[in-house]
Length: 436
Figure (tube, rainbow, N blue to C red):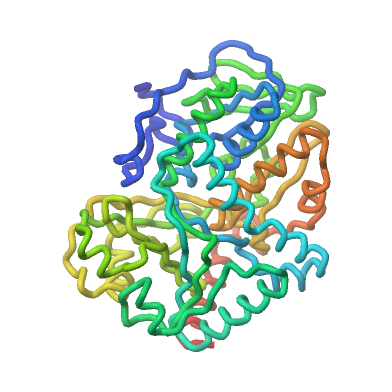
């Protein structure tokens, strides 16, 4: 393993997560050395980049992916592994902000990301412990009213994949006294995210694509007729460039740096609980997330560990003690797990947009980007990868709809966006506690 320190990724190794410890075997790809040419260069081997690259490779394009660390090193290999349909911003919010036509457009694609994942797993034989179903958990009567409004809204757009759950029905999915009820999405699910990313990377290579790892991009030339990507070891000149660095793109492309803000979230994994206890706690083996502003999310792994996540740190810093931060809420859900050993705890960043709507666009004529999934990137990134591939292949219909949505900068600018967001999160946390 190359021990060189990278600007954002240390030595490039995956973080000390349960996912990294249980990852499928994967080769260490070569670093970029020398000068290369390709049809499409994708910066970032997370879900957005891999989805874009795989769709294009299937269309016959010569595709090269450049990753600063390992495939899935960032959010794509660290997240909760939950297939949650929809954007962070609700369809109601999108309709109010951008109009009914945009809301109908978004409603027509919110199930697409999960469908793409299931198709990829089946087509390429990806072993990632894919399971079905996710539940939104309500802690209060106000949460239940909100979920009922969402259920009605989605049905109004012709989507019948969601079903309301009473308090008693919730126990069929999570054996806890905490919840007032919930809503199940039968088209949701969960999986091992790092193994999904590794499988998609292998599929890109199977179709003739090239992936360079451990190759942080130092600069890009988006003004040239043929964009150029530079690393310490070499260059790639391409007909089309796609930027998918998301929360880890850093300052390589200043135009994009301040469109989003990195936010960290934390997860920990218990020791294996055994089949009997796992089914006692979560009988249907779905994944759960509650509907608070700062939410908890959790599920059982394939080897019956509870993977429990939550919390946010605006600006992307790691908390000093992840276990201490998460234990309090875990014990509220499952007090019977008090004192259970925690084998892994880790943190990772997602990119937050102020509007909570992902951003997609173009710099110049031949450079595309997508980022800002705001905590809903597992499905959104797969959908956006397909839309980017459509645009590069000449069909700009869906790309233009997203690219033309106005993006909103964070209030307070570069200096005050973090404290502003912290104050806002406190306000919503108080509302959650008061049930208003």
